[in-house]
Length: 189
Image (tube, rainbow, N blue to C red; front, side, top):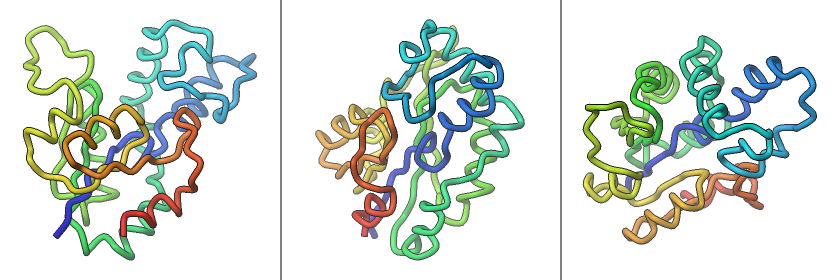
């Protein structure tokens, strides 16, 4: 049975969109940028702020009740209901460790019927936190599992493809994906 590795943020959920609509725009009433204008990730230059200010805002949102209530991707859920039993599923994220407990609960509440393994590649580690892997490709190389990898980052796709894992780019404004979500998911079958 083949294994699909799913990125969580901006694939299984709409983190950037939720953060932008629920945290950034309400705190910046004069903002004229729209979500579709976020053609870079991280989007700090588009927003005219420092990368650290962006990361601080995003991490605060990740710890909020609004993030815990994010709607899962309906397209991915529909695909899983139709095809999910034909594959094994791993969820893999890259984010600060402090933000993962709420994400883990969210993930298994919405995708626990299918996902059996949740991996974390810590970013912006705190002093004393061990660093085993610095990116998703290193994690997957260590794990030794994964046939398909779905992610919104072209760099992550390229790095796992060097391991022989087929990458599938999930469309978002910052990766200029030209294929629809439905067509993207159809390539998995």
